[in-house]
Image (tube, rainbow, N blue to C red; front, side, top):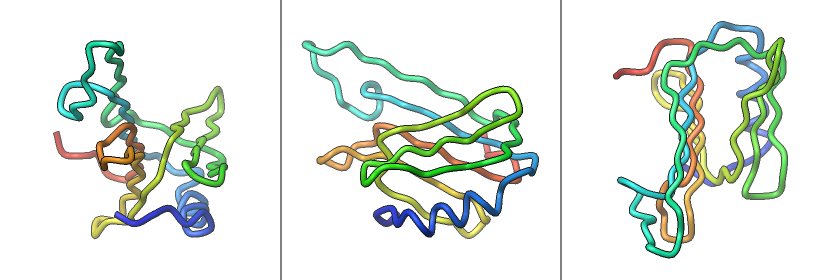
Length: 116
């Protein structure tokens, strides 16, 4: 993955607009990310192969970034994104890593379901 370049990510978000897509969205500060600390509450959220269609995707911020996907009846968004790549299967992969490289948030968009 590479550091986010807003214009490049925005261009990829625009390409996916108004298509049936699958998303993977997760946040974590515990479990496998080993952000564990007895002084902090572990939290996380996870959805894989959620099917969506967004009419507009927007990346904001100067880093870390936020990506919002505007759907007909709501929004999906991820905040704290630092890195991205377009993989060999044409999937847009966005992640937020902390200063130690640990995953804190991931938002991935694909026209095909993600492997389980």
